[in-house]
Image 1: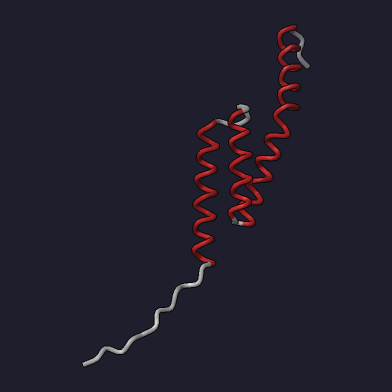
Image 2: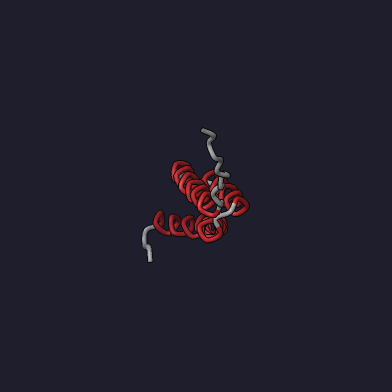
Length: 96
């Protein structure tokens, strides 16, 4: 436990800030986890919102939010390509 007055104050501030930031952080982590599991557009949209809000509130750095959004978008895009059925073109016989 802190002994110095300023250290006591700092401890109180840290506890308060931790309590305020916790919902934003948990919502963000949950949204990112859902996007990685689900790999769909709706989950990606929710993750974007949660990441933007966490960055706005200074829970995470804005560049970290940007990096995570980029990686999630890339993940969803590749998952979408993998599930898409390749188009089969009808073969035509060439006349000679």
